[in-house]
Length: 186
Image (cartoon, one colour):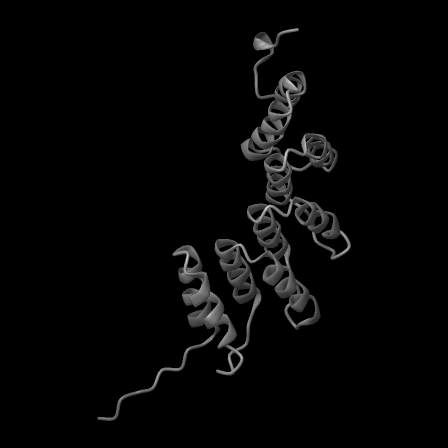
């Protein structure tokens, strides 16, 4: 009986790329992504997003930005996950300016920023000691009626605390409704 040849498809490649990215094997993930076109397998949003996530493990922020730009001109345009993943790559690589710029580009790309977008950009600012920008992003998050999460509150408070702005951090905690009214001080 002849053996059947199984051809990998988009789902197969996506599974492998994601597995490699999670295992911090970014080189293997990038190699798999690069081999899709020669194998005549179409990339979808998951293919691109998984590869961008793999770039985070390698600190390859330039490659992540290039892949995001490639997505914009491909049949598969970037989505919120693409932007959030690229913002995260920039955060990890210490490229806080780029993280904030990507967040600001999302509306022009007709994408809605979410708590992940803001939390990641705020965390990038916190890591870089950019407390005023972290506070501004927090205000933007609140103004946009985006759900506040523990990461965005903590990152903004940490940015203030690192700069010796403990009152701003305390005010933020109260404003975030994280403390019951009876625990508020003056």
